[in-house]
Length: 542
Ligand code: ICS
Image (tube, rainbow, N blue to C red; front, side, top):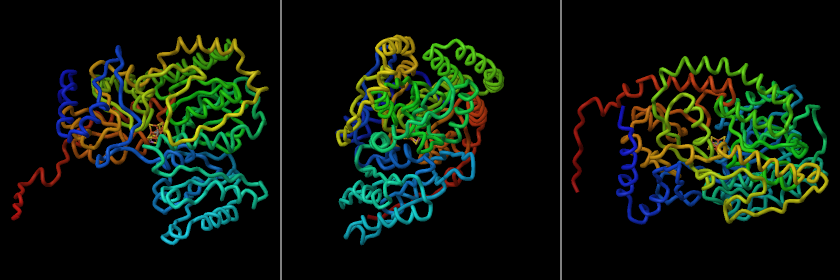
C-alpha cells in the first residue's frame, strides 16, 4: 500500500495549492487543513464554491425537496420547475418507507412536477402550478400538498406562497397546501435548503395536533434521520425493544400527523445536526423540549445514545432495560466484528460526504480499526468541523444571510411544564459530561490527518494518487472515477444497494460490506484499453 504517514499527508496542501491560479489558491488554502485535535484549527466552510471548480455539492432545492421533505410519504411534493429538477430528485436517495395498511398513503414512488416550458417562463407559471395542484388533489386526495421552487421560479417571480394560500381556500382549508422558496441558487449548497425546509415545517405542520399517540412513558422525537437504506427501520426496532416511543422522525418513514404531534414528545434526539438543528431549536424554544445530540451510526455509538436517553429520563427501569438490550444485541455485533477484523485492521479510509456522515461514519470505521486519514464535508458549517457544545438555546452560526429568521411562538403552558429551570440545569450538567459525543469532525480525527471542506474533483484525484487509501467513501459522482483509479468506493449517501447501516444490525451489515471491499483487488486488476495497449500519440498541426 501507499505512503500513509503523517509527514506525507502534510505535503498534500502545498502540492495541490501550487497548481491553482493565485486567487483560487488563496481561497482553497483556507479549506485544506492539517488537523490538530489538541488545538483545533479554523477552517473555511459554508462559502461559495469557486466557479469553474468541479464540486461535490448539490443545490438548495435538493436540500429542501430531496433531503428534508423527500422521505415524507403522505405529502404530495410537487416540483414547480423544469422536469429535470423533479426527475433527478426522484427516489435517487434510497429513502425507504413502510406502510402498515393499504389505507396508508404512500406517494414516494411518484414524481410530481409542473414541467415548466418556455411559455411558462415568458408568461408566468402560476396557472400551471394551480392546475397541477388541482390535478394531484383530484387523483390522490392527499392530506397535504407541498410546492417546491426551482431556480426559474425565483427568476420569473412566481409566488408559490400566494398560490398555496389560494389553493387552500379553494379546498376549504381541508387540504394543507404550503410552498417553499427553495430555489436552487438561494444558498451556497443544499444546506440553505435544509434551513428553508425546517422553517416551513415549523410554520405549517409542527404543533397542529395535540393528540398524544401511544401510552409509553418515554416519548421522543428523532431528528435528522432519513431512512436511507432502511436505517430508520432498525432504529425503530431498537427503540421499540427498549420501550421508548418515537413520536416523530424528521423525516425518515414519517407521516404528516407525526410532524403535527412532534410537540407532544418530551425529548428530541438530533442525529444529523446539520440538516435539522433549526427544528430542534424551534421545538425547544416553543415547547420546552430539550434536545441532545446522538449518533446511531456505529454499534458502540448506538449503545452510548441509548444510555444517554436513559440517563436523561432518570429512570432505573429504563436504564436496566437499555443495558439488557445492549448486552443482547452486542453478542452478534462482537462476533461479526471479530470475524472481519483480520481483514480490516490497519487499513485506511477517506470520507468526503454531506454535512454529517463524514463524521458519523468514522465511528464505524474505528470499530473496524480502520483509520480515516482524510475527511471533509460538502456543505458542513464550522460548528460541524470544529465542534460545539450541545446546550439548548445556544445560537448556532447563521446559515445563510438570505434565509428568513422566522418568529417562533412560545406555547407558555407546555414550555413551563417541560423546561423548568432545574431541568435545564440538570441537562446542562449532563451535556457537559457528554460533551465528547458532539465534538465535531476535527476533534475526532488524529493529529496530522487531512480535513478538507468542499473537496474539488482535482483534489480528490490528487488525494488518491498520492496516498492510495484502501477505501474511499463519497457519492455516485465520484464512484466510477475512483474505482478506475484502482480504489474501491462506498457510497455513503445511498449506500449503493446496501444498508441499513444504523444501529446494531446495521453495524453488522457495514462490517461485512466493508471487509469485502477492502480485501478485494479487483479495481486494481481492471485496466483500461489505453493502459494495456500501446497508443500512438496524435500530433496536431497548428
Ligand atoms: Fe444530514 Mo447525501 Fe443526510 Fe448528511 Fe444531509 Fe445529504 Fe444524506 Fe449526506 C445527508 S441530511 S442526502 S445525514 S441523508 S444533505 S447522505 S447532512 S449529502 S452526509
